[in-house]
Image (cartoon, rainbow, N blue to C red; front, side):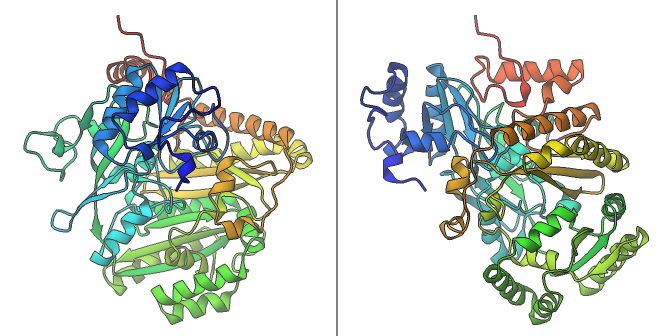
Length: 544
């Protein structure tokens, strides 16, 4: 939450000379539509909310944080009506520039105050939430009812919001069986650039209800993974499932990335697991090095509480060094309604992992992850205060090996410069349903922190870390490597999560598809003021 000094209790100037006339005029207009604490003019707050985990944008002239959907729509109409651009922001965990302002006359629209659970229907198996609701809040709402989302959250789910996740391809928990957040959406409320509220799905019909997605053309799909380029999400209806009664866990180690990747693909194709993911040796080493005894004890107690004394005792006996230093570790979760069904699924997964030269180890990691969902986001920084930024590609299973090898060749070509500038990398593999392989290389380096690094971790955790000195050479090297990797992904026709302003989405489209997407942008945002630059979309043509 912001302090009172960060909100506009009145239209006070941001400097002794006052804001520019156009900003002052916008503040005056918005003051008629929004509550006083929904307009944020404090310079430090605007700077923080104009940056992400990787970089800083131009500091927005203004930030608004509406707590009401109709006020959100009215405000967006006023903002664009005065020629200001809208930059929608959810939980702020982006590292692809998805909401970073790139110009003057920019307003960041922070949707985090739209945090109401609007409806839970066990009868219809749906939940309707406002866009600022976190994945953690949804899980905690549904869990006492014995319900759950199919895909039910990201590692950053304590802060990551539904609106941001649906704009950027959220995935992880439950993804190996159910896909990403896109697959569970039944309908959306979206505010377009002109301030109109568009409802998609069956709720968008006269006398309709939000229980079904695609009666006719799928309008909901147009606004999923759009990086906010087509509108600001205000609410979403999501389908829910009965929470599985039984979970089963397994972990394996592999000598090579290719064996681990092949095993992940085999297990994904079998459809027997809810999650399958692989950590590389660097991730395993870091997790051992950065382990915190107090945190470990707390996690162990959560395992005991949620999964029983026997499960907790198994983790305690295995200790921290379950994966070793120089191996790739694969972890999976099976889930079902009976012990027998889950045991059968787990046995199949084990057989497939062993077939690819895996060796079974204690299942400490997947148990701990499931028992400690949505932890505080202390991991936004490394254990030595280092920074990180990820990239992502989604490829067909048959293309996984060459994708991994190609990125490793890029890293190898920069090995000397990386060593000189204290830049390292790690890799994460994740199964998406039974048909896609997610590959995520993560660059890590020592550099001065950004505003989110200083404000996101728990204060007690932040006190343990020392901010590194500025490292412009390392930062420039990271950016160079990121650009090379993105170009490699583009050349291979890969899809990516969290497109933002990092991946060349629009220029990668076939001509006919590009023409259609440009026409859609022009129709919804004729003045080009809705998150301009996101998805690499061309500027809209001015209205005559």
